[in-house]
Amino acid sequence: MEPKFKYVDIVFENCICIRLLQEDIRFFYVGGISKYIWCNGKQYTKGQKSEYVILSFYNSAFLRKTDQLENPKESDGLKYHLDNYHDITHICIGYLDGNEDYIDVPWKDGEENESSNPWERVEYYDGYFTITIEKVD
Image (cartoon, rainbow, N blue to C red; front, side, top):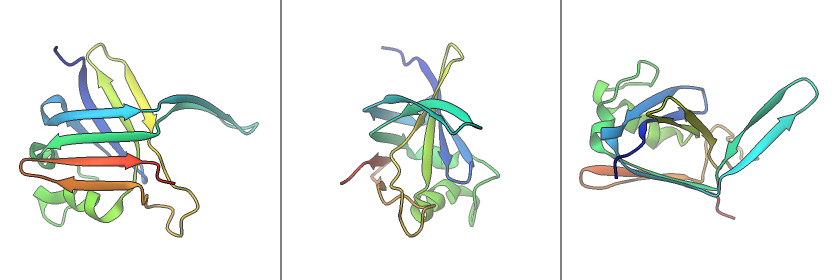
């Protein structure tokens, strides 16, 4: 079956985004999706929130460039960011028909360092890596 998506954007806490293309993606799984509406009288937003996200990418993803990531060495900007910040807040799935799904990932609020998510972990394997973000009670 031919994939119907074109890319996955990983969005970090400081709004930096890196786009990973279909050929970089080994698989992804987003579960427990629910819709939400938030309003405080002055602001209104709606979206989707997930309970868990598993993203698996081939190591070619490390070659994707963005001038927004800290690049101690040009080729390890994404790996450096994943290893040091644990701050993915959203993913955006871009489809071939031009539509997008923008999905909040689980985020543990109330931590001492609220710009880092202890529920995010990255595991490295031979030729690929996997990012898992899931609510742990």
